[in-house]
Image 1 (cartoon, one colour):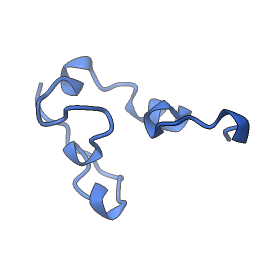
Image 2 (tube, rainbow, N blue to C red; image 1 turned 120 degrees about the vertical axis):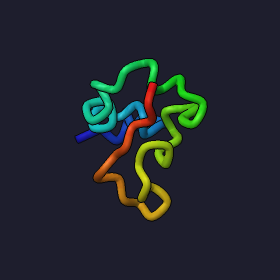
Image 3 (tube, rainbow, N blue to C red; image 1 turned 120 degrees about the horizontal axis):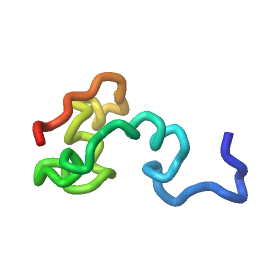
Image 4 (tube, rainbow, N blue to C red; image 1 turned 30 degrees about the vertical axis):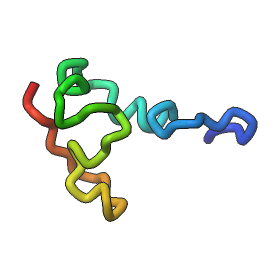
Length: 60
């Protein structure tokens, strides 16, 4: 759990997010279709509906 006084400003800074995405190489993040780590829909087809279970990584 995250201390309310230490809440990150970005989901990409939370321990959970970092743990789930730790094995994704830098080349994937640099793909034009990804753009930034905040672009969940680049890999998670259900992101617009709040569904983040399955991911399909763009080829690096």
